Image (cartoon, rainbow, N blue to C red):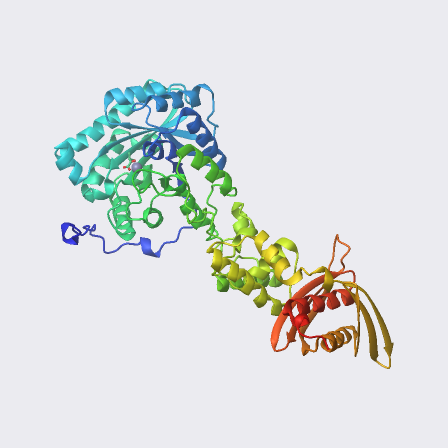
Length: 552
Ligand code: KIV
Ligand code: ZN
């Protein structure tokens, strides 16, 4: 059954002097949300009037100026919803609602009933023009299909005249445009535009749907450029796009087609819509944003968008959703975490104005994401990431040589659970493995006598006394432990730093000891750096088990 020979390649429009590949998008197109119509039509449970109202309010808040709110002649909830918007005066003055209708008189009439009293609106009429639909679905000739479109346009115009107080825009979609012969699509659209008297100054929109995505995005862009070049009344109309995502390229197709001359783009939040969905406005808008182009939509609170969309559509947003997903700014991989940390620090140090951070295409905070989520720890994470979490969430800054021992412990935990390790657990592992110390190894007091650069020291540790000598306090403790427990211990690394803020402890010391050939690390906090360093040595020593060897 799995046999590619069943399918044939898309036939491109003959365009050899295309200009769109040299264009860039320097401003946002006019956006039209079709969440409440196309998006809604694709839901297992279509939205209630309450859900539609909530989503409508969000779309307004995000800055949409054109919103297709339903198909009122086809569904009672859509009809009721449109009436609610109009009757309760919920449509801001700078927002135009749009409704869809087939090119049938009774449906157009009912559509105008739904809209009666609205200040301004778009009546969107469509019929299918593609070869397949003409031949196989409607059994109609080219002329027959064109006649349906023109007749629909006439009714749209006639019924509009019965509501002269409303500012009406007209929109026509040759459904399945991308599967239609281009010259024929142009012929139909020219005829519809002609019917609507283009010179009258009325806003006319010709919307070009890739009802089913059939080709690579460049071929769709060729179709749109060809269409724009050959449409007789191009200058009087706004050319709009309505791409679907069957091949996963709805956004790319819309982007290239904007380069090819389109003025307006229809789509939905998170790409909800029939089958694989509509063009995702968040993705296309954020693509523009990340290139320094104002998307003219406000995506600064993406968590709110996700919450409303999920509760209205009952479809969860993928954690990998471009720009918006929960994990799209998160690095689990150690090398990525390290690069992000260095790159962010580099930005801060060099006061770099334009964002250019490794692995982060935008600053996650722009859309309301926390920096905390950027570094998360699992078995793939490296030492830098673990240290970063302690520093970021607990203000515990460890010297670089401590990063590896710490991450080895955390990675062990991640590997044995197979799960992510939360910041709380990282801190717990840090405490358990490097800080916690038994009562008997707690430094209670110490006394130092210095004579001719030589220190003689007395330590009270867990209730018992210990004496030692050396060039400093640490060396003296080392001497005391080595003599009592007959071991060979030396200090490989140590680091002490002041702790600012709230607690009594004023210093943190980290130490790495080599005891009988093995390395042990520990951390201690105390009121002063000497006490912290001595305690760190005792803690590390206690972990070595060297005390259980015979005392000298
Ligand atoms: O996908 C499509 O063709 C449509 C039209 C009705 C515009 O949704
Ligand atoms: Zn559609």
